[in-house]
Length: 271
Image 1 (cartoon, rainbow, N blue to C red):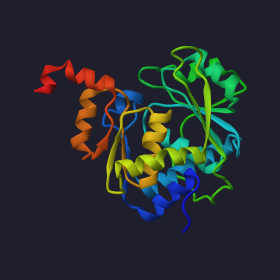
Image 2 (cartoon, helix red, strand yellow):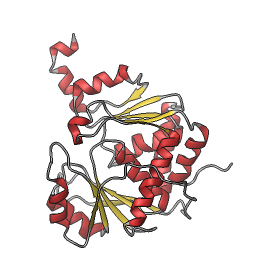
Image 3 (cartoon, rainbow, N blue to C red):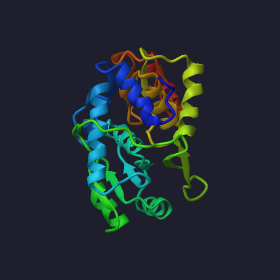
Image 4 (cartoon, rainbow, N blue to C red):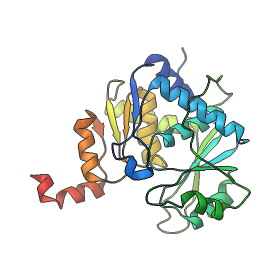
């Protein structure tokens, strides 16, 4: 079998190699994020959930090359929605949860997405209504898919097919959309897997939102390239994060500087 050249080929390889193995899990505090029940999926279940999300996007009129806005907490539906876009050849445009009407309108003007996948959250109970008001009637608001779908044939996607538009931080100006292709994302993950010596039996904890270089390139792509297990964490609850390390038997994670500062300032935790 030839080496994968697209993100979806990496996913399909992992599913074929490790169908019943544990693949993806929510943080135990998911209920405090969006009211949902924490989920735990095998690779076969991840694959079926991706197909289900593709079916819902297609039903909303999304096709290859179309852009899809996404704004979700760091829960399993976020990577599933991203991977659904990659599977069907659509362009994922994920937004940090901190972005509000101004950033969403700018994002729409820049990327022109036709649907926006989001849901209400505990910290933003009016999220769906606010997004609809900000984006107007030209953008359909979709809830994230939660059901599996029938198997789909691979789409005709090339390494130079655009996969994402991610946003710069906006700390010195308006956030700028940065497009990346399938091939560029694969190059990003490849050297990390090699240098970190990660393998399929590793268990990775992701403390970054899966919306940017750190979350997608550093965690999502590393996960699917190795076929390992990925535990999600919505940043940042230090007690939950530290509890996930032994609870999920984590072998690799990255600690954000903010978490280290919180830890150093907490004598009880250091003891």
